[in-house]
Length: 94
Image 1 (cartoon, one colour):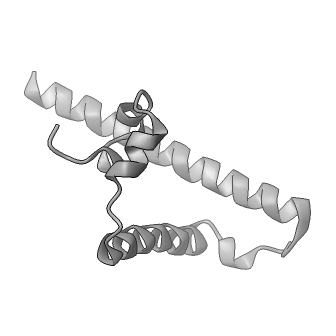
Image 2 (cartoon, rainbow, N blue to C red):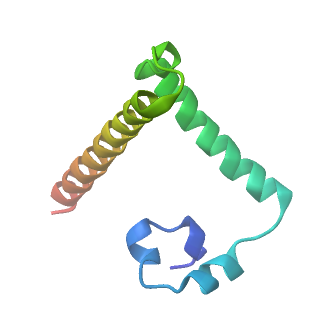
């Protein structure tokens, strides 16, 4: 693959030592800004579609559990969408 390690899927990064991953991450402020804005977009999506802006619990265990459940559901839905898209692409090629 031509893409840097930190841009690849998690499965491709699992066998690589952490020191090697850290060495490849650029320290360019623009790169850091791009990664931060990507995270902020996810948080904005969670706030809008998963009602994270209407949480009744502001602190404590309940708020953490609520946030963890929302992020678990978000990650599971993204994983399911990726797998469905992969299957559809595989069927189109065949």
